[in-house]
Image (cartoon, rainbow, N blue to C red; front, side):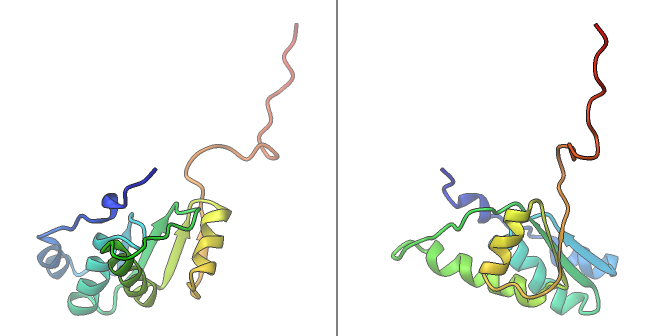
Length: 129
């Protein structure tokens, strides 16, 4: 069972890196409710406002954090920041896309599985005996 702590890291040198690189696209490989994703979205608005911002998600279940747990306040806030900033989301599965839609993400979502194969397109050849 996830603890939620996996979403609580951040990158102290990110603002200076974005200022120096002046990226056209910022692709964040973090869930939208993570501090790192929100940090990147906010820094992008200050340091690279013309850069396109997108994030990747595997989240395929609703995680609910209850008060008095600080995550019940922080993670929905981080998620809203990322949703507002994003031009696009990439979901690892159709169920991850469904969660984004259910949580109110209204911008384009690309479904891009990272692992596995399409068994309808790639089927094993019959083995000869």
